[in-house]
Length: 305
Image (tube, rainbow, N blue to C red; front, top):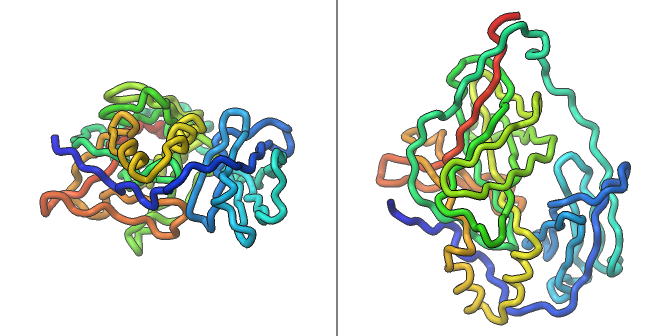
């Protein structure tokens, strides 16, 4: 298989930051820490994630006084804080957004049937970047071969070589498909779904009932790569751009996500770095193929009411 290195080392930082500003993110109603919340800083160019206790740390010399830090997570309203008003070791509280009720039909069914989506997957070896300072989401459209709406109840992702040292988790995100413009449309994600792929090959996870609605035609699924505080700490300890470049070039520190070939351009994969508004499509391979993440799904549909 051919190894392809994508999104190589964007905006690599040059120095270690000794002084930091820290904070902890909590759920306002439950007063519990919010793990893997996204903290955006440096004029929307850099990102860190909170750890399992909701803690985060930002390098002071990456924060200008005219900048604003944004704290966000799925299902919560975004909190923004001017840098000049930030105080070290502050607690930040996220307020939940009002959820839109999902369509429910399976609960009234006497009989349901499971359908496998994207059952046959061809793959190539594909290394994914760019590094711990950037939020990366890889997404693609997957057609519903059952022709009926349903709910996903299992999700599978193929890894060529997982990063066992850092155990990086993935967050699932889903979107509607814009048929007119032939691209991902409105994001439908309203629930935090975090998975931890840990082995080479297929990693399968159960999805909570009635969480991801799969329309009769298609759905866009995405995976967001989350970089743990331990991963960020190891990266930040490097003292020069050359050392960081060498560290990122070591595939032991990177995901090797399975990617499959598809012939239709609308089925090809796309990626988003940080908060870009328009996903960027991957280029065509071998003049007639496109690539997308090697994902499989099982959905439950109603066959008798």
